[in-house]
Length: 210
Image (cartoon, rainbow, N blue to C red; front, side, top):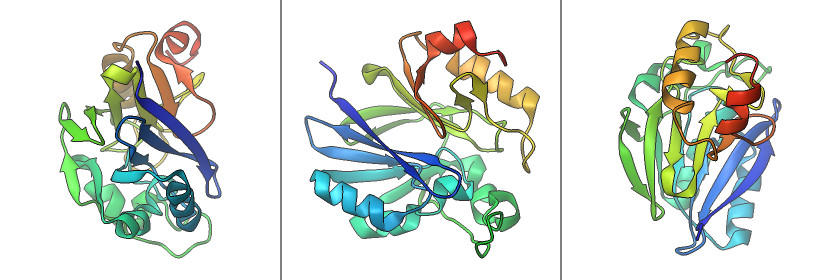
């Protein structure tokens, strides 16, 4: 029986999906890509009466990482990101934080993970899938038992992530998707960084970029 319940919150100026991945057995939760609206997210988490265990960042762009520190500090938890994303997080010219007229900002993670790492968080076994291409250190978080992958801006419903930002590469992104995501079971639910949820099987059949 599935113990994962996901809640999707659309935050910030570019309509980013922040996910709350709740373990219904333990009432713990993972906060994935809290890009903005920290106060709203903190309030929602407290209303749900769940205990956050970690913040997981798929990549370091402002619209995914912007509220991470405020959330982490509010609940006394750590921020996770891929080890190759440190430069993106910490460099305003790469994390795009000045793009919408806000002051440029640097972001920081507490724990840097590697491809293939399995994180025991909130009662889930979360496998790190290194998927560069949108950024140099982008990654996805795969919970095999729950048939779920949190894909950030790597893969979208009927589309893929942009590669025209600093550190982006179309060829690298498509290789990441083919080697790391398209090899997952077809029934795996894909929770992307923008737009609607999809499945690996649907994208194999219908995604024009693949």
